[in-house]
Image 1 (cartoon, rainbow, N blue to C red):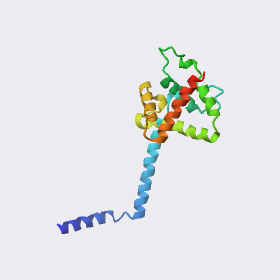
Image 2 (tube, helix red, strand yellow):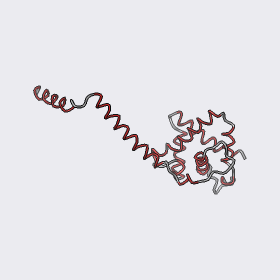
Image 3 (cartoon, helix red, strand yellow):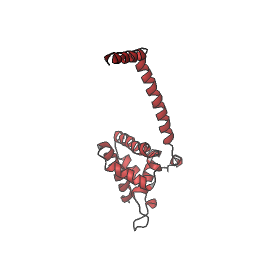
Image 4 (cartoon, rainbow, N blue to C red):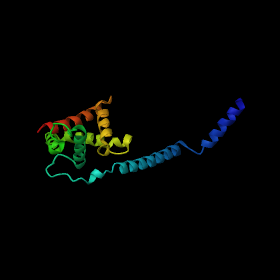
Length: 173
């Protein structure tokens, strides 16, 4: 039995002998680059949305078009006023109020918040194969709830911020 182990070990050593450490690392890096390229291309394809064609109204100086789309969708999901005595969300300038709040933030804070909002919207691609703005009402509400109740502090903070800004945007009027 010892003889066969030595024989197998010798065969394995002979098989991997052509792979020097440098060549092995080089092949590994090329493979990783290929996988990353394919993944990035797939992610970019999944990030496309029919909402990308929505035009942003004038006067939203502090908001990016993707943030405009995000807050429109958040208002639809988080403020279900249909069938209630509350004023319809479509008639309240929620996004205009959120834009004003964003304008009152320091530039570096606004930039970091923008990164968090982008993460919130795009992270849905991982579990749902589409951005947050394209999720069904039920999935979108579950997604927001999962972020707000997350054990991961940055995720929970972003979830809190998007809900706080949306609710405040509605009730400012």
